[in-house]
Length: 112
Length: 111
Image (cartoon, rainbow over all chains, first blue to last red; front, top):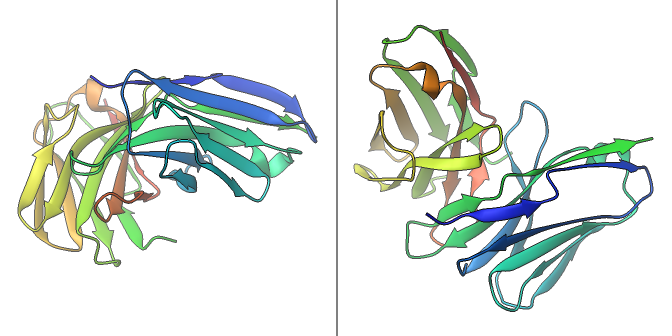
């Protein structure tokens, strides 16, 4: 089946540092999504990317849809303690009921 | 808040018992989804619905059934729960080819 490889699995950083994480796939996706999950809650959408090569920002977050449509990255600049959580990439497939394929997640810890 | 309510939020039950989880939405979205989340696997699709009484399987559908008798409710049933179905279950809603929005999950433990 289709899989997304997300890396790194975990990161321990100092407050103020920049963070980068990425996802790769052997399959092409129509849309790439980035979600964040806090403990005891469901994933919350951060950024949606709809076109190959698209670069989109949401505050301190920047994400790009790879030109090959098989990869995406997420950058967080100047991290703060509330950035702590698990970040998931997901690929959206249009002709399969809008099915999402998720990466394994990147757990981010931020030391004040 | 995407207008999604999952119930119950926590449940502990025994192997072999039937279990039903409920997802209720107030957004009138056509599509509803059930995922399970396990360490190291991210979220994996169990079943989804594209309308009332219209459902299809996801990648990990064995041992699960679903029903959707009205737009706002999507039920996930474990006919005879097994310990391998211990997991956190998430419901999501969406429109065709648009990002999905998730509920806060049900933590299910099967002893």
